[in-house]
Structures are given as C-alpha cells and as structure tokens.
Image 1 (cartoon, rainbow, N blue to C red):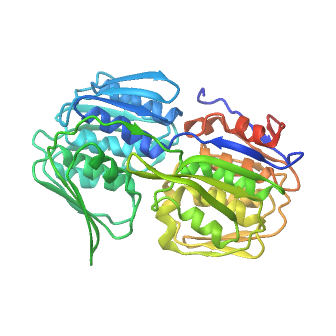
Image 2: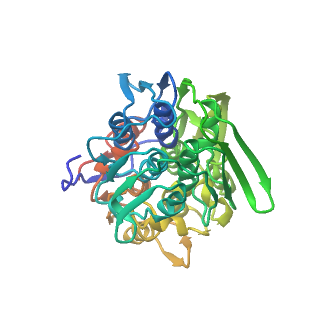
Image 3: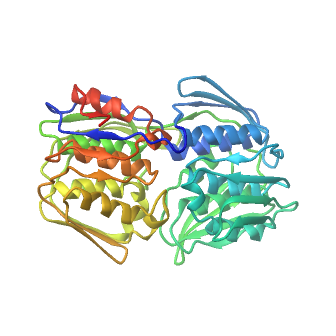
Length: 446
C-alpha cells in the first residue's frame, strides 16, 4: 500500500450464514522466526506455508541485506541459505521493517550479537512504538544503540565485537523481549538466562531446539527460566508454518456472530500459549470443536470448527493476557453481542501495540453504539444489541480494521473502517475470503 493513501471498506449483514472450509495465512510469529533462524543456520532451510504479508516480506528483505540467500519458490514456499551463528554481514542499506514490531525487536537481538553497524526504521506506526524495552537489556551484551527520543525508530546499532551472555528478568510479559535476549545470546559464549514471571509464547524456544540449539526451560520460584547455550552450530531444518491463530480469530468470530454459520478453519497452530481466546470463547458459550489434531514442526496443530452461538459475558483474568494479547479487539467485538457484561483485565500491553490498541478498541465500540469503559488497564464491555453504523479510525492497525469489519457482519447497520490497507500486513485477501464464506459482497468499498 502506498503510504498516505487510504483504503476504506464497509461491512454489512450477509444474505445468509457463513459456511465453508478455509485456511488462514501462516502464523506471523513463526514466519518471522523461520526466516531469521534459517539465516543463522548452516545449510538450506526449506519453509512451507510462510505468511506472505508485508510484515514477513520485510523480514525476508532484511535477511537478504544481512547476507543470507532468501528465495521464494512459489506461494508460501521459500528457501533460506544461512550464514551460521555470528555470520551475518553488515547491510549496505537501511533495514525497513514496515509495520512489524515483532521483526524490529527480534532483529535488535540478532544485530546485538554481530560486530556490524546497521540502521533500522519502519512505517509511521512502527516509528511510534517503544524500543527501549529491548535495547536496554541488549546493551549488556556490549552492543551500542542510538534511537530517537523515547527509544523510538529510526534506530542505529553497533553490535558487540565480543558479546557477553545475558542474565535478565523480564519486567513485563513480552515474548518479543524474551526472544531478542535469547537471539543475542546465541552469539555469546556461555549461557544466556532469561526469566519471565508470566508465561509468554514459546515459539523461539521451540524453533531453537528444532534447529539444534541447547535450550532448557525450568519453572522456579522466580518464574519460568529459559537458558540457551551460546555459540551453537544451528543446522538447517525444514519448517512447516501452521495457520496463525490470531488470524483464525476473525473468521471464527464471524461464524459465532452470524446466525446459522458453520466454518472450519484448517491447520491452525494450537500452541497452548496462544490459545487463550479459545478458552475464553468456550467460557462465553461458543460452539468450538477441534478436529484432526496433530504435531507439525514441534507445534501442535488442528482444524477449528466454529458454529453460530449465543454468547454470554465473562470475566477474563489478567493472567490470560499473554496467550491472547492480539485477540482482545475481536474479543471486545464478540463481547458487544454477548448477553451481560464482559470485563477484560490487565491489558496494559495493548497500549504499546500498532496503536494504543486499548483506547482504539474502546473507540471502535463507542462509534458503533456499544457501551464500554476503561478502568485502569481493564476494558469493560456491556453486551446486547449492536447498532453499528459507525466510522472506525484504524490508526494503521490491521487487527482493529479486521475486528470492525467482523462487527459489521452482525450489527444492525453497516460498519465502515477508514483504512483497510494495513490488513495485508498479516492477512492478505481477508475481505475476499469472508465474502466467499458469505456467498456475496458482505465487505466492499463504501
């Protein structure tokens, strides 16, 4: 999408139920890591099911600039010829990470362990997001970082010549910060240790083992302790990327809201540290089934069957936030249609996403006649009939845009988003897919 150009879309009630089978794009978190770990491995890594959204394509471009050979063979089929741990080369151009906070923060970890100079930037949204949460702990490796005021991009880094292993306890639950520290530790002699008080998604640990690193995870009184032995020889290994559970949330939500619907989302990643939304939806009374459960590439996978359901309000505990942090906007939409009140607790992390996602989610609801309040870091939604008819400001946030479009499929009046262009960062073809399930043009330009 050309920056500065907006792509508005409007969604309205379809003529009938949503039906059919579909596959959502590959998991974004695993796609980023597959490209990065392939670049650090010796040999050629074959990747299937890679998400080809803009965020992941930025990571592929960055790995090329850092010396890896990254080749697209066909839809979702990629090959990465790696440089080995410590073998990345100095880029001749700026690394532009687009809209992806995950890619930017993980890349800080990669760069910190290599004795090279690099400059990183992103789009207008990413340039507002804080990076001190990774640059501060990474500086203990010996790397130097320079940022704009407030620790924001553009950012320059000179990696450590002799990187030191890290011993770091996460102040807040963040898989991105944890992963950045572990990636930096790959280039350092000895053991890097990271402690998290709350469990966060463990794709980095799983994939490090898959590529041959020595990783241990222990539950202690202080929290979950992850140790990685530095300077391993990572060996190329095939990666099959499962469907992204965060992307699957949108067709699942649509099926739950539109009367008579039954939708099967195939091959979705079911890592227990990513399935908080499914747990919450079942508590709300959602009809959800798992079929064809299996393990692929070290990650649990299955087909999710979602059928129209009468939902009820629930109290979502703060400890569940790390396992569903990206799904709160669409959960808030579902809560708007539920009977009773839903309280989502402990959402501080939403304030530092692509937008202040907590405030923007509340604004999305309010614009469409839903009563909601923010109390501290909690979002309280009063469920019932949803008038709709609002114009939603997306703030260049793909999840807000998709959540609002799902709302319009069941609200009394259509819902319009000011800009749907950023949906392609994670879910290319989103509107066309929902229209196929609906058997018509439920989502279209206003």
